[in-house]
Length: 106
Image (cartoon, rainbow, N blue to C red; front, side, top):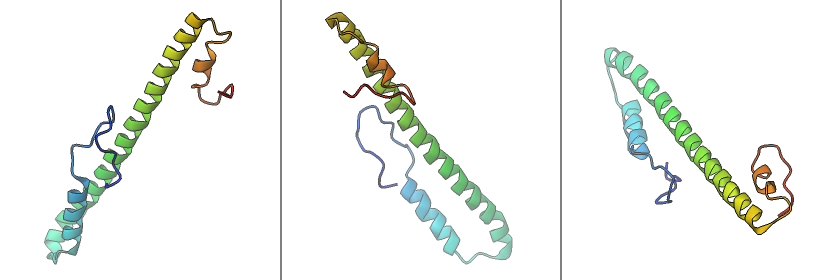
């Protein structure tokens, strides 16, 4: 969790303390629990780990999607500016942002 970008504009920060959650789960795993307690806590700990993984995956997807959106918005602005300036192919800025499209070598 230490590699989470900090204080970067437009990058949403997780509102949970991942390191603290991991530490608590590790403490729980080391605890000398009676079999009855372990039957209750083990599934909860496993579910918590899966939920935590999903939160991280969704957070990373959100960051990627927001970056992709920002890049496309910048390409739209560049295309509009290029059109005003009379460039021969202002839409190339937009095509460069489309997946699987070969850039024009800017």
